[in-house]
Image (cartoon, rainbow, N blue to C red; front, top):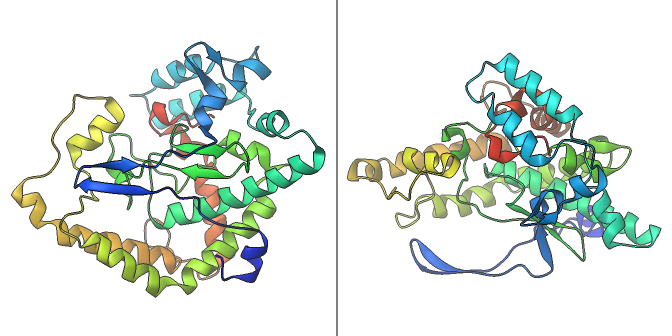
Length: 310
């Protein structure tokens, strides 16, 4: 991104944080200063009202919305879509208010919304290529000074989200609250162009990306995949379980790593999620991804804790 003139001018980058590993399952994570979870801003916590309650007090409360979504857990898809649509009608986006709260001058607001749009696009494309899941509103931070998004918690990656009890069918988070700050052009302006440029750069560096991931995925000390028990615990809040895997599961490590690497390479070549349709053009692939990420049918199938209506 830094070597590309167009993206460098936009100051496009991925916000990272440092990790010091002590063992396979323990370590220290850097605290991301001057940030807050998007969910904390939108929903609030422990007596602190979120933006939805403050700016739209007559809308449904987020806790009511989650109960309504929960009521259709075992329903058919038509019922899920109808309920999701009803929730969306009664809970309007408010995330754009973040910029008016934190940045006072019009020029500053425009500048920070631009930075937000670019960072959202870049992180969406890279997150899609790496199959990063579990993108609920507490796992995405926003920088209080730059308005860039910072993703945390990569326990579900390389499309492991498709193994969850409620499979994740979306390529990245592009729900209504995240679209609201993009302005009148929505996903069809700077966001789309930045997505296309990011995907172009990723495709150009396919061999480099594959080489780095190959080292990671085939490392026998790295438990990058998740087992069924762990997947269930992630969504259904079961008791802590040991998902280190049996000997038989460990023998499958190389096969699973190979499949994950092949899937990343297929995405970089423009293949859709089912690998049966290929989009040779970058704009075609990006269009497919945006449609999949905003499709109410896909969003209505997600786990209630993902809060797809926000």
